[in-house]
Length: 352
Figure 1 (cartoon, rainbow, N blue to C red):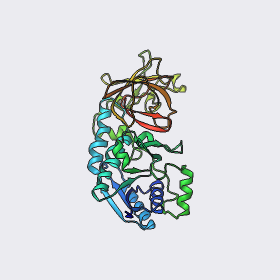
Figure 2 (figure 1 turned 45 degrees about the vertical axis):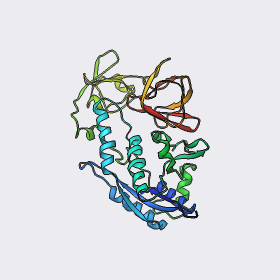
Figure 3 (figure 1 turned 30 degrees about the horizontal axis):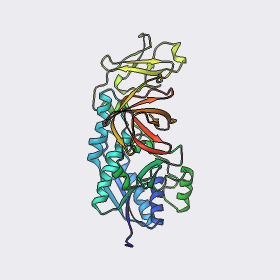
Figure 4 (figure 1 turned 180 degrees about the vertical axis):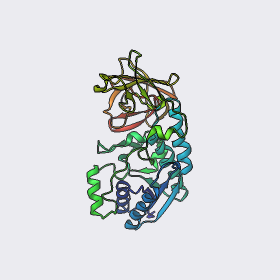
């Protein structure tokens, strides 16, 4: 009955996961550090060996065992291929969401359970709150760092096996804590970009898997005013990445308002496209950890760090949700995630 519970912590080589491991150790858990190795295309420079070395240094400093979880196949097949397929269909993917679903809370969770772990833990800025009705996912305390948006796909079972030790703390305090305990990565800069891949040039990346054809940029009247690299790689609301040829337009910010994959054209305007009264958006690949019924009012986010807004929910079938924004908001790109909340409680979401 007094046996310590074992937690496998995903050590990325960064400060957040390092502090997460340190906190669990201080709380009395049996902690094992795990570096998750993922796939990288051979044409990209990858620093995974340095990241793994940093993770090993954290584990050595804390005096905990260190393992490596090979998730190359899952990352290649479920994240990278999804990323490529989405763009080739004219959709805008969210690879960080899929990375969490299939790699961190998929391959890594299976790896840990196969080795007798009671939980896995990550350095996500999110909170697990245990209620009588079950385990809930809530926003992280730090509004600037909250990552619950990227965790919406987690099932209740995945969530029950997961711990988020730093979600109740602001990032600046995590830095201070890391320095106090002497973590070797205490001053390391945060990683940015797409999941494990980091910053990538999307057109250059996709050019290895599909043919990108340069085409025309149109104004909202259909006049040719510029050129683009290939309609596939543009997102509604995007402001950069195309070349305008008309001098007087060059001084005014222009945003992608639509794209036509078949005609290979991108249309731009001076204002981002917003939803209209009664705009309905259909969500598929639904994950819900709380019941929803027709007419319920909840909050939604179409993008990370977007200010939440109220939507009315319609439930035509068990596999589809329709959301109707109650206020004007920037029109989301097809393929993005719509994440639903009741206050700080992340109840799930779907793909637009």
